Length: 315
Image 1 (cartoon, one colour):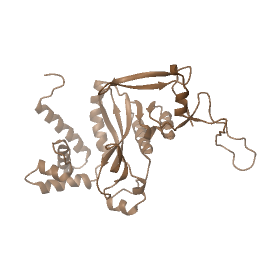
Image 2 (cartoon, rainbow, N blue to C red; image 1 turned 60 degrees about the horizontal axis):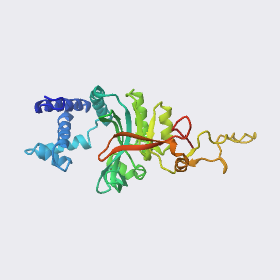
Image 3 (tube, one colour; image 1 turned 45 degrees about the vertical axis):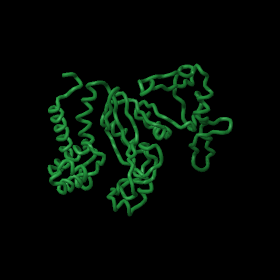
Image 4 (cartoon, helix red, strand yellow; image 1 turned 90 degrees about the vertical axis):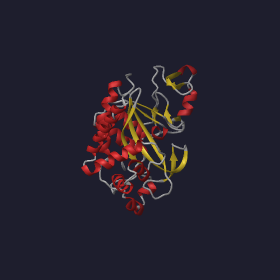
């Protein structure tokens, strides 16, 4: 038998053992069977992954009872999604690390297209799944990755501000009172802090411009002792190498002491786009990191200092 093949019977046993771990995380014996049924239904063929059609595929002779129990575990049972993810992490992460070290922490969000406006968190917003504004839910996630595989270790629905301020809809859909509006970068930072506290093997934090443009997001990652490679908008302003804001104005002895750093017309940051175009050709280095579908995935790194440091001081 090759290293990549597993006998069908062995696969079934491994899957059953995995579901047993999830069932223990659900913390109540009555939740075990419906939880296992729901997870199994998600992996079966069929376009519709809502509870009723999954119950019909799994239990054709008692659809109603199966539907009720599976719906309860999804909609009403008080199990903890964080405990569930922790059970998955404790089992899967050691398996990943046997094949290679953790090299990256990946911050991302996932959109789920949803019709209507009454399901919790659904509103018209950007949905990466379709690449445009659409009625959808969005979840912010943190995954750890080796060179060959990744594992989500944190996952949370983003509550849009329009939902956070709507007491009626919150009550109707059961949004907990302690859940308040947070930006996606703020949610991601909470997930990263938790991962650091749990001593998850560190990796370079990767994120797109929706996160990287947020100055606080970048600064706190640095404060946590992590390195990052993130996208930013070309309009983000930075100080040229060797420059920075002017110190706060001297206190004149009246009122509160000034604390804000200063700039003026002659001394101001510039956009990263302007800084990039101002760099000489020899300051750029072509990087290739993996084979993509049609050609190698490449990027260019600009070096703004003679020492070769790619870091710019942000505004």
